[in-house]
Image (tube, rainbow, N blue to C red):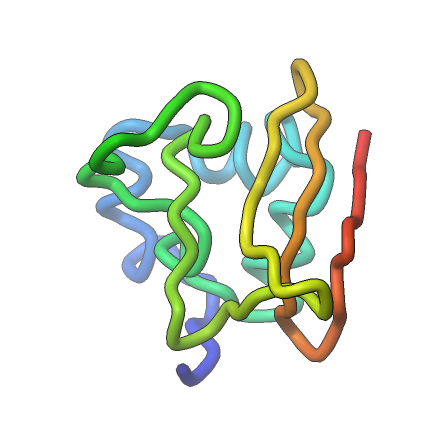
Amino acid sequence: MAPVPYTARNYALCDKCHDVNNSILADQSFTYHSKHIVADGAACSVCHDSHGIVNGNVINNSHLINFDLSVVGPSSSNVLRYDSTGPRTGTCYLTCHGKDHNPLSYK
């Protein structure tokens, strides 16, 4: 998938429910939102499914995490999952942007 440059127009749909400039790009909910969106050109849909997740749960599908398999793949241990570990913290098991997250935790 080609990078999606950040412009207000490209993220207008997301901005209907989220304050993209003052929350998402300010890294209020996830420390690396701005890096992924602005620097890496990752669309929100690379990680989030705005339509929800069938059989999802609050542990491994919280925040509507549902990876786009054309961009994100399993980690080197063949796990593809995001675990929420509390407010603004989580753990990713995946391969994306050339990096193996097996796992990668953030705060």
